[in-house]
Image (tube, rainbow, N blue to C red):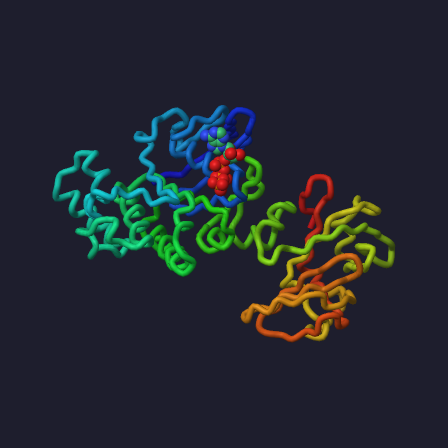
Length: 367
Ligand code: ATP
């Protein structure tokens, strides 16, 4: 096992910049997720770490060792792909044993290691079967067993669960995470699924257009997004965004959104100094907006906004309410079932402790 460091990695395919100068540090034994939309460079980054792709610029280190130009077989990494590439003409045992046979390990050691990996993946009773006699989930377990049986330095996984049905995905998520905790292999996992990233990653690196936008624990990514991209990419329904102008007077600090005004506590004065009169983007998550009658309105904690109920999504576990406030819609998420009459007046309370404010030019978070 080893720690992995990427320094200024850049990769172009013709005119496309797939990876654009990224730095990343992955600790020994850590489970890190590369999360981002399709085409943002996740797979290319993973392939560069594996040695399947050469960067145009930058360096890859495993511990202190520069492995940038080392071939894949000398890096001791294992990869699991979306399409569980198990060999159809081999039994489960032979599939898992394959990389050990190539290494020329003695037969009894191969048997011992295959059993160890198969037990960890709970496929110990399937060793004599062929892949066509397995379910999709079982086939993916075989692929993971084959990847870990060599006890790699680094385990690389590229959307390994996306071919599985929804229920199985949820089960495999926790199983893979538990397995990784048990064997403590440094793991880099690629997905565009934010729930997978949030539930599995010790840390998440959010990528967009070849760049890393933020690296942090799931909690940091969710609660302290460093820019609009991260704020908008993680969270369902998406964070509400609206433009507002900052005004600071001796009496109050306010965000003027045109249709409504948010008065902030004096403590915001210091944070927003220098932005007076400027337009910013304000963000608030749907779960941080409540009907005002549901909350104890302690002074300064909430800002009240009047609107009408535009649309309601009753999901059973949650109720999503779209509230029309003049020229824009604010989406509110409540847990449980609630009834709202379409078109009725409603007063909503925005939790000011949960407000995010971003610069309009760079999208960087001010608060
Ligand atoms: P997805 O989630 O869809 O797999 P990704 O984030 O993994 O996307 P990459 O596969 O790394 O993204 O691709 C990044 C960019 O590089 C894309 O624009 C893609 O079209 C381009 N690209 C990747 N591989 C090649 C290649 N071999 N030749 C040309 N362009 C490529």
